[in-house]
Image 1 (spheres, one colour):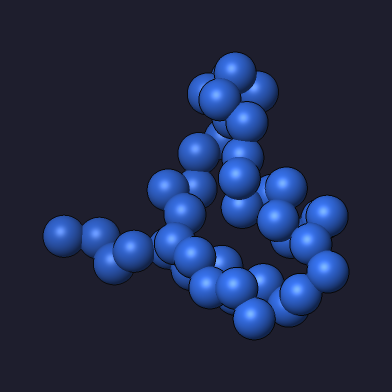
Image 2: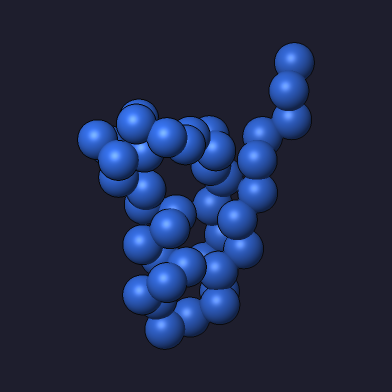
Length: 40
């Protein structure tokens, strides 16, 4: 299993920077746990 935290970017920033979490979820062969950090 792969566990990672994400910033949850969307829109143009995601198009420009890409999304590592998205690539892992869609292309990975292992289960992936994605979570957002708690807001301060």
